[in-house]
Amino acid sequence: MKLRVLVLTHQKIELPTSLKGLSEKEIAPWKTEYHVVNTLKQLKHETKLLGDVDEVAAIRTTLFDWKPHITFNLLEEFRGEGIYVPYVLGYLQLMRQPFTGCHPTGLQVADDKALAKKLLRYHRIPAPDFAVFPRGRTIRRPRRLSFPLFVKSSTEHGSAGIAQASLVTNDEKLTERVQFIHEQIGTDALAEEYIEGRELYLGVIGNQRLQTFPVWEMRFEKLADGKPRIATERIKWNLEYQKKHGIKTGAAKDLPDGVADRIVKLSKRVYRILGLTGYARMDFRLAEDGKLFLLEPNPNPDLARDEDFAESAKAVGMGYDRLIAKILKLGLKTNRG
Image (cartoon, rainbow, N blue to C red; front, side, top):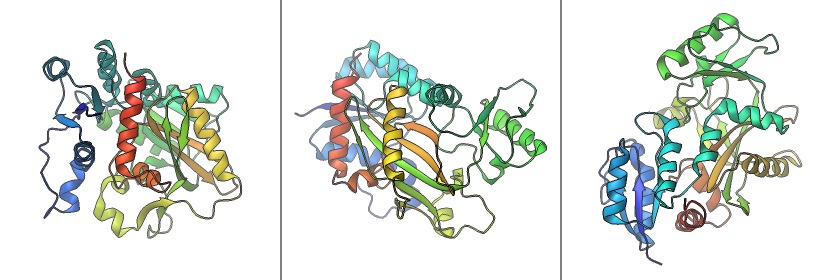
């Protein structure tokens, strides 16, 4: 069935007709939009890209004028804030407009890292111990929380504000990093127990019936000795830095017996506890003693053709066109308002 698909993005972009002659660096900021839009066109769907969305009125006008069958959600923020995206999806629900990815309630809970961690702790999901440091309050470490600690935003994703300095080993450094998150990122800060070990990911797709992809791993092949193996903002988004330090992701190899099965079972439990829909990526740490810890659930992860989620889907025979088609189908079934 040919569909009218409205693609929503927070970016103001005009996609080129071809990538010929463009460098990886030039393509990187909008490659997800390019891959999704071009695949939708290859699937014979009529596609309209609505970028730089910061007013609901612009969405409303397009819905009434163009009457899309479904909205493909690629929003990472709304008016500069990631926490506002669930409200945009809530508006789409009120308008009875189907959309792809996670529904607003699941997205809102998962995006609030502290709330998600409290809920998952209640259900005894293994995760690092943590504390939240709200803006405008005295920074005081709870006695139960011991160093080293990893400090990050309580709501922002995509490794925003994460650097080597995010790993702290004393109260002075903790205060400095919490203040950095408060002042530079503009959110509350979350400090959690740092788990030394392997960084593992698992892709999950589905609504009621869930399918998982192979366990994926971020490898740090050339990072200097003594530097913590953490997915900093530079490691995640700086192509030159990735190449220089041998940062690669791919299918996890030589996992201890039973670990892959534990990751799959835990991921499905977390997905259902948080009420997620559409698709998500679960981030884990495997400690040297074999203990497994959930770091974060990530609804609506990056959908670029060459990123972890699509690559792990490809590893089980779900090519990129099939992946995008499945995401559309799940959105049409579930997110109707």
